[in-house]
Image (cartoon, rainbow, N blue to C red; front, side):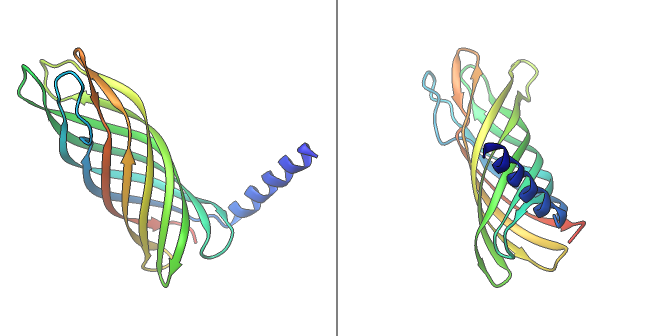
Length: 190
């Protein structure tokens, strides 16, 4: 019975992907990883800006209004933090990750969607005298709205909650916060 269930699940995913939509997209946005302060010095990230580039494809299409998409993305954002015994330091956040999204509500040409994801984030200080480079796995929870302009183009606005922390000298600096992005997708297939 377990073997038949696995085969049936595989066939469902295969059949659903026969008509999968593939697309490329980009967006720009702001990041605020400073919800929390560090416990030792009270350091906290400020707001920053950056960009996203991604590949997107549908995984399962249950109906016109209910489908699950995957987004493989590269992001680059910058944010400043005031550290003790140092001037304001800019940190670069480079993200390579995977997110899964599901449409939860459709009205006209708009979709409300939600998702979860995780990525490998490299956080690096932009100052030469501060040698901080950390790699971490950063989980996130997303919600957004998508506007289908046509079968090949859409615009979206997305809000992400992100969680993590990095070691800076003898302090642990939280990287808990949000990211707001506005972007678009060009679908290469229907």
